[in-house]
Image 1 (cartoon, one colour):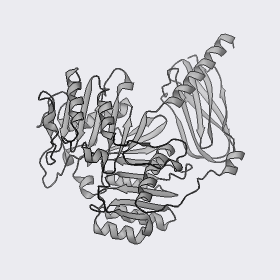
Image 2 (cartoon, one colour):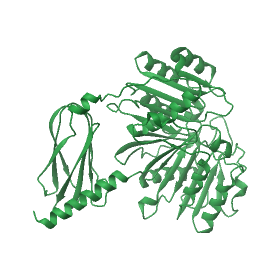
Image 3 (cartoon, rainbow, N blue to C red):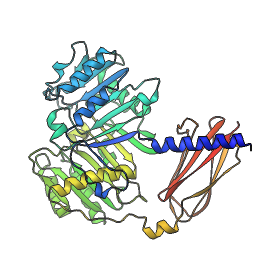
Image 4 (cartoon, rainbow, N blue to C red):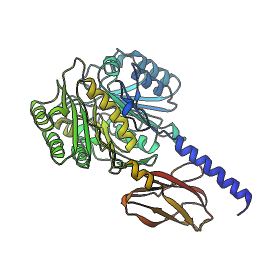
Length: 469
């Protein structure tokens, strides 16, 4: 191997390591104070009276298309209409869907040339268009332009600044296109003009697939209501909890979800919940008060507890830590009648970020939470080294063998990035790889230089590999 190749490979390794470490394609925002004393390294971001301004900042980034589906936008925050009008003026193709039953006093502030459509009136089978998402530049030739904003907050001053809310912003073109396909189904067309004849809302919608995404090596699930059976997805995620479970829920009326939480506590899982006192049903409140005791808070106001999220195993990185969030309240209507969106993000960092918010909310309301020790103890950390890896052959003729060793059973992920820092088409995940020596073989998509990254809860090891065929 020549010195020039060594220099090139070293340069690529440094470039890709820097690029992958610097990636921050998923951002989380909270409009109430967070408790960073329980942070495990990445602090939650508190937007102090500036969540609305953050929406505006993202709108200002749009270059080509801007698709907005928000239940309620009011004139109390005119800066959003100004930003959307400015986007339209610079040539951005803007479309807006809003709920017909909500006040939406901000809609008249939009330029009259901007196309917008309302959801159908409520009927026996349909209720409301309850989404709160925005899609920016989904089809841009530059994938980095594509952004999705979603979460629990409607677009008005009270929701941005007073009520409890969270937001997720994801920079990923595949996810943005999935959101846009769903938007187009409600719009009734792929173009600028809505088609009410072909538009589908609520129970008339169909499952478009495209539910599983890999973003920064994290598995992200996307579901829409009512077509995707979201409450079953909620229960499935909830039932994966092995150590701890936290729920922050605005409108909570689904008794099956409350029962599942209480069952988890009976099975030894630490369970805590905040429910909005004005919109949690008496049957759910009674079940959680009886089953959870002091770790259930029915928040009495004066503002709304408007979050809709669940955190699973934030204290157990050896399990499958995840966050479930979006617009979906835990109600029969949300599951069967409303237009809603839900994300499930499998990531221990995300779980801890949301826990920082939940912890601050819970304790500010007079509650207390027990500290739970992570599955990796200090002694284990000292004994169990990061994985050792070798690549054979290297250079490879299209097929790469990744040989790695771990000293104790643990989850393992293998990711391969090309010279542009993009995740290659294949990755390997094991929830509980046994201790010992292992080999993973993968066919590389093209000739070139690649970064191989093997990750366990105890650390990450990287190596450069080349393929000549």
